[in-house]
Image (tube, rainbow, N blue to C red):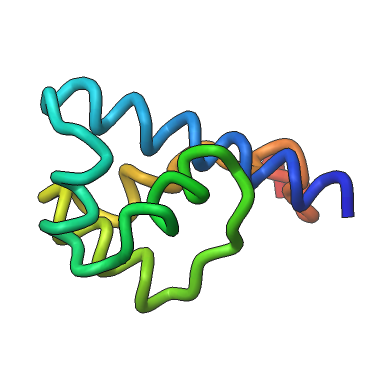
Length: 84
C-alpha cells in the first residue's frame, strides 16, 4: 500500500510540473480535461488513483501524450532483469 501512495504522489508531482510548464491553473486543466477541479487537485496531491479514462482526459486536456504523464513512475519495481 505504501508503494501505491508513493506512485500516486510521483504522478501528482509530474502532473504539476507539466501544468506549470504550460502556465495553467488547476481550474483551467480541469475545464480542458472535463473533470472536477477538486478531483484534479487531488490528483496533483497524490490523493486519487485515477482510472484509465481519467488519465486519457487529463492527457488530452494538457495536450501531452499519456506516456509523458506516467513515464518513470514505478521504474524501481521492474520485475524482470533488463539484461535478459
